[in-house]
Structures are given as structure tokens and as C-alpha cells.
Length: 163
Image: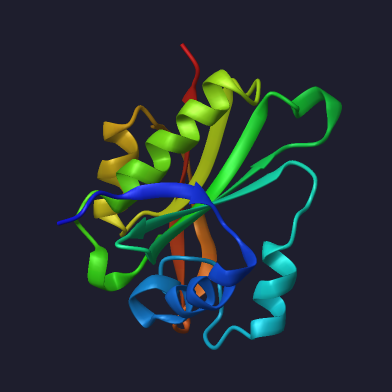
């Protein structure tokens, strides 16, 4: 396998990011609804204060996306949260780990972020394992957190504290 290259997302990546999020294996583990519109993704991926968009590419093909948002409220400006997805054809190949490692480096060394938060469905064991491997801890559980395919699912609230 070629090297995974992490870079800032650009306008040329938007359609590929939308297609990744539209994969049933991907959106079932996000808060997205099926059939996302191009317009919605274009709006979501445009520059916004505190938001950084990263992509993972292999051989110039985008295979993953991570969006991190540094909280803009003054008393929580040391906190960021993020969402991540990887093309289902590239699951279990280190793409998510590489995106998260890059994000952690940005937070620790460039963005003055001391706390990174995430929410993950409790039945997404592979994702939970990756997060734990990279230093995130489960801080709590949200019961009936979100509706997925007609049923409510629980979610873990996880975080990583710097140092």
C-alpha cells in the first residue's frame, strides 16, 4: 500500500468527501442522514472560524476526512471536537489512525487545544478501539443518543486531555 498523505481539504475534494459520507457503511456510524446533497456538503466544507478540514489521500485519491472544530466560546476555547469518516473500502488500514494522529499534533502544538472530545456509537467497537489506542477515554454514555435506522442507539462521550 502507498503512503497515507494527510493534507487540508480543498474545494476539489468536496464531491469525494460527500460520496464517502453517502456510503451506507459510513453514514450509519455518523449523525448524517442518507443521501446528502452536494449543496449541504459544499456549505459544510467552506471555511468557518475554528474549523479545520483534513483529508487522507492514497495515490492522490481521497480516502478519509476529518473535521475538527475548536470551540469559539471563551471559557471553552481550549476544547475541540471532531468527526471522522473513512471510505469503506479503506477501513482497517490505518487511515483513521493517521488522520487522528495528525489532528492531535495540530491540537497539541499549534491550536492551544488541551481537550479533544468526540462522540461515538457504543456498537462501533473498531472506532472505540482506535480512539482508546490513541489516548481517548470514555467519560460517559448517552442513552438513546441518536436515531439510526428506526432505532435509538447509545453513544459514548470520549475525550483526550493533553499531557
